[in-house]
Length: 69
Image (cartoon, rainbow, N blue to C red; front, side):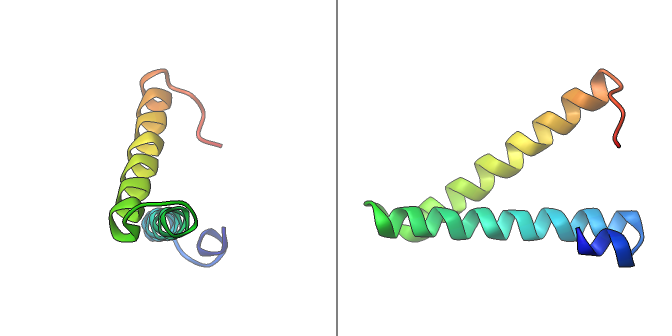
């Protein structure tokens, strides 16, 4: 949320997408280390799935003209 208080909208959105993907990557690495699997692969998988699902949610909202705020 902090970028939205200090920066214009476009850079704030990009920063929040990057930070979210990085956080999802970290969660995937942790999951692989705590359970079983390859940390790098699990991190990338989690980041891609989370980012694509967020994009799908955004596109569906835009398709039906849902208010952004």
